[in-house]
Amino acid sequence: MYKDWRKTEKGFFDEFEREFEQMNELMNRMMTSLGKEPQVYGFSIQAGPEGLPHVEHFGNVVPVGKDSDVREPFTSSIINEKDNEVNITAEMPGIGKEDIEVNATENDITIKAESSGRKYYKKLSTPAPVDPDSAKAKYNNGVLEVTLRLKEQPGKKGKKIDIE
Image 1: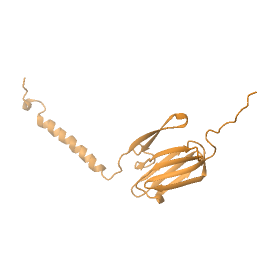
Image 2: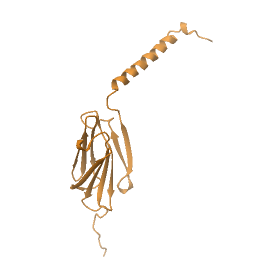
Image 3: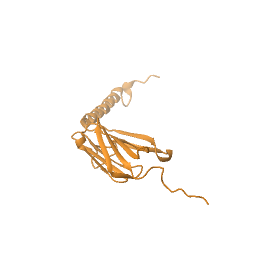
Image 4: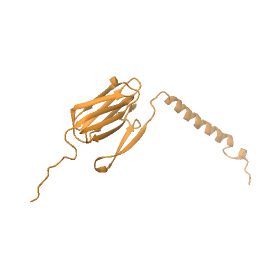
């Protein structure tokens, strides 16, 4: 049976108007967010020690500092057993090398960067103890590379025990 839309409690035009109001609210929210830092979130999965997966998050959806506009850069760390080094890479586009500060201890590295348009912050644990005095860093095309010597050779832990 055909139902006349004019006789319904809420007519077609009422629904149509409600849809336009929702779209208008959405557009207002989008317009007020223009010029603000875009929301970024991602993760990477790498094989860690003993072949176990290691998940690392990056972005600025979850605030990493006091300011919500601080972005956590994508980073990766790899042990180079041949050269007895740890290589850490951080992607931080949109800043100059003079805006970057890197601090290292035996067990962690802190990367901070701030320019007029972007802020980055990340504190990561090294996969093995390192010598902070051996640190070398270079920044090119938005990618920071930090190299540190390992305190001891990986896989050389322990002492061989003779069996009687």
